[in-house]
Image 1 (spheres, helix red, strand yellow):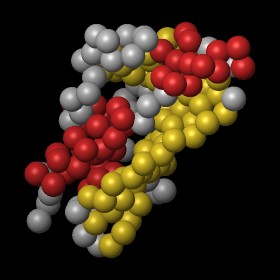
Image 2: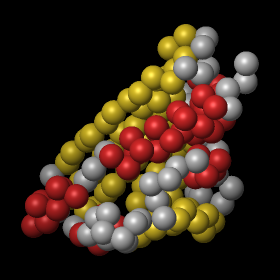
Image 3: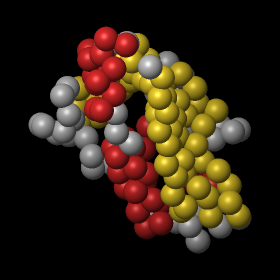
Length: 152
């Protein structure tokens, strides 16, 4: 089974300022959803691997590793695939997250997040564990940070 979830919020900062946060590892320092985010390999470019540790009881797994598969500074898009643990341990064959920064005006932008996943038919009930809420939390934390540190 294939599925997609997405959400977006408007942020009152220019798109390039939002991308300076989302397009780098700095984004890992502004979110409060995860207990811990460790850089296992890389510098934020394609190939970077991060380990996410979740709060106890947040879901049926406690950690997963994600690998950046796309970091496009021109289109302001970052994609990462789960490569170890997490969703892969409960029957998913593919789990990708995407963040996009979309210019709205010279003073505002849209931050959009998307989840794409594939789950084995015999594990289809596990799609109930897919939630956009952690990514919305990241976007909200990032928006708060961006507005507080806006270059006026």
